[in-house]
Image (cartoon, rainbow, N blue to C red; front, top):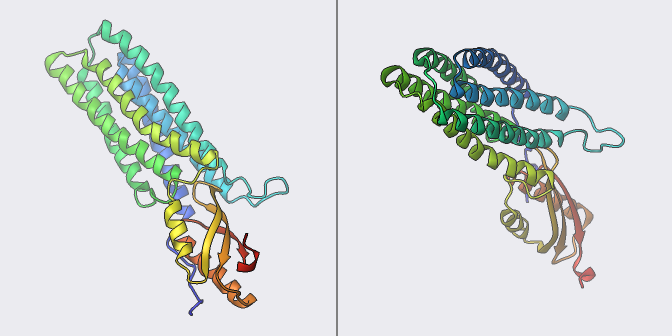
Length: 298
């Protein structure tokens, strides 16, 4: 049996590149949201203001996620043996709650505007939205490669791409107001934006809440883990499997492994190494296996 596995898996990503993407995203989106807020209030457009709030939530997502990645690098301390890694999950949870609250406020304002639509400069709204499409599509592209490797990168990517789509809708709305004088389009767009954001945020809230409560992380399948461990010929059964997220990028597990034959210390060690290697393919990075021999069963 060959035990010299290469543990250099492609599960990792370059933190420096990710940090750079976050910083570029924060700067560009902050500049744009100030522009959008300013014009939104100046021309009294709820669709621009709701999109600006969406952008503000994105900037806070990017900023808080960047802090989360900085905390991942911190070493463990006496009272926090995992370091501050789990903070990235709590940040994702906080972001989701923040977005839901802000979108609730947008819906209330839009309903008021729908009852009494006001004339708006469609051309200005369309131009501002066009700038938003370019900025959000570019910053979203920066995160595209690493989005499946971390919940915060995925959340940043989803926020930015949904923002680009929202800006496209606002642009169309501006053109409709300019061409036909349909000013009711503005609050209707605001409500549609809010519904899109609430829908996309709900999944983020669910996943981050599950990981905060030490549920099985979304990128791990308990069935596949059990199948992989039971696939070893030396293993008779596996019990007491516990899997949880240490951070948004690292998962851990413990399990009792019952053997169908007695093994030497060296073979037992090799088996554990092989099982750890198999678990890397299941997105589990830290494993503790309690080996139980057949005579101890019952």
